[in-house]
Each structure stands twice: as C-alpha cells, then as structure tokens.
Length: 106
Image (cartoon, one colour):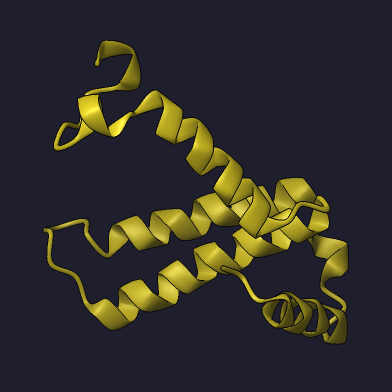
C-alpha cells in the first residue's frame, strides 16, 4: 500500500525543516484529530463537498497518520492489514453483507 519511497520523502521533508522536534506521538495524534475535523468540515452542510478541498484535507490526515506510524516504528501496511483481519472476523460476509449493524449485534 504505502511505498517506502513515500515514507522516505516524508522523513526528508520533516528533517529539512527540523520539525521532528514537534512530532512527538501526542502532537501527531492531535494533528490527526484536527485535520480530521477539517475534513469533516467539508461535509458540514451537506453530503456534497468540493473534491479538491476533500483531497487536501484527506492528504493531511493520511500524512500525519503515516508520520505517527513511522515515529512509533510501526509499518502502516502491516497494521492496516492486521486490523483488516480482525475486522474480517468480527464482520463475516455471511452476516454483515449489506448491514451496518455493530458486530456484537449481528
């Protein structure tokens, strides 16, 4: 999913600006929440949103997520795949298909 080249680009970008000092895990987690709020704001008054604005805000959320994973020594691809496996077992196709019911109520 995530190319190692992209992670290297993010590391270089941060290093060139000496921003690593501001990227403690709690700061990055806060930044994800802030940017997610800005993403949600795109849909504040309806289901239609300016795709370019959504694109920019989603990029911010993903960037901070990748930076946090990297800071914690986690492989983004690995943790997403592991979570997908857990979710797969909670929501088997046979019982979850076409339903938004929480797993403990299926």
